[in-house]
Image (cartoon, rainbow, N blue to C red; front, side, top):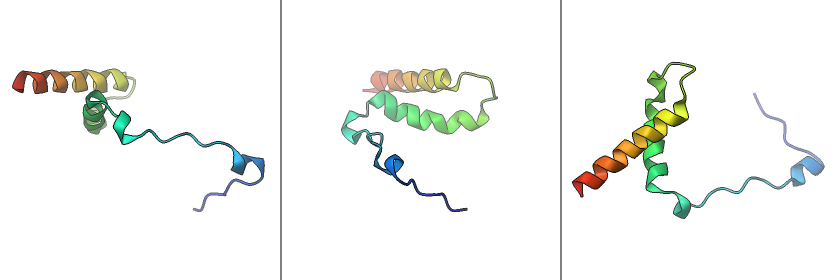
Length: 66
């Protein structure tokens, strides 16, 4: 199904800026990979907390190996 294009003043509205790749932190990077595991997480659980806990655990493991 095709989406309708914005017309008039709505088409001129400022769009959200796309973050630069240079602004991504290691925590963000690991959190992105941790999000892949969210398929197994039941509904109602704080997925953001799980993702960042996993990302912090990955960063701690990385630090211990360096």
